Image (cartoon, rainbow, N blue to C red; front, side):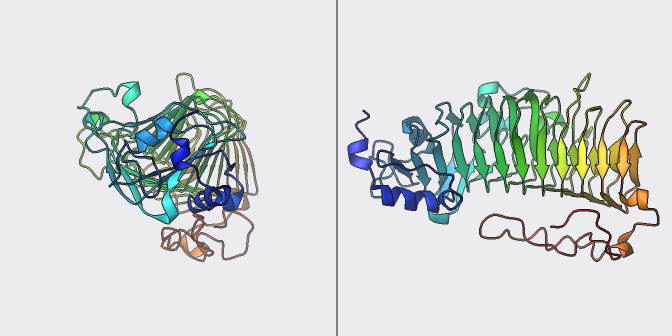
Length: 407
């Protein structure tokens, strides 16, 4: 038994209270037991301390190294400037996940500006172990309410299963804000805000808001994310060979060279649903989501000939096609989607099934066809539980047609 427990065991009631403060208990997602430990981290702590509220640890890494299945890491507010990335390699279990989150709603910023890999030169590569201000190769964690900035990737998770990531902010990183790859299954990415991520080393070719790419694993879910103003794509599923479910997610303003990169290479899709040479055929699902004012397409198969299921999504004012699903032999099924004022509403292949979409209904679909094209309500502060702010009029057809997203 680890000697720290006799100094840092909380009562079961106190542990449940801490889990609720970290945002898990209300949804029944935290597993508490009398034997579990809560480790407290604070900017004025010491890594030789007991890890209690009165005697907190100094670094998140020390708490991660000490944590065992069922434990909770509660991080006090402040900025944690990293000189080495936070590396998570110990797994929880399905019944006893390890919880990492902000203490009682305090603002916690994990800053990777000082990490050498954040400043990889043009044409350079980031060593695998250095990818991510948070680098995770572990399963059954519950990570919530952290703000991750200026890292070589924000969160990088490779070979991760059964994790829940909730209410994270990943912005202004030097690669993708959040990347899940490798053999990774049954992960939930909930209410993520990922924006302003860029990759100077590749002139914009790679940094997405959220990437689930270069791997496989069923049961991965993205829900309630906002992915905006990233240099490449909002969401990218490049070379991921298993279906991903995306719901109630928003992607906008991606693929614009806000950083003045030479030889700019950002793609600028809201949702990139595949890719590779050859691209694997994968039946990703996107429903109830919105993509607007991206440099390129709203949603694109990107060469994925799988049975994509796209339903009740809305696109608006994208520089390319709203729904670009015209790969040869593609089996996409599009139902009740809405395209408003895109450069082109839809590009469909010969095997695409299209029914009840705005282009099927006919007529002109422009700004005057919907109640509002003002995204301001949608881009405001989230609700207390992390859910998207309501935007009941945004891109809703004036004629009452039951097409497009409702947010």
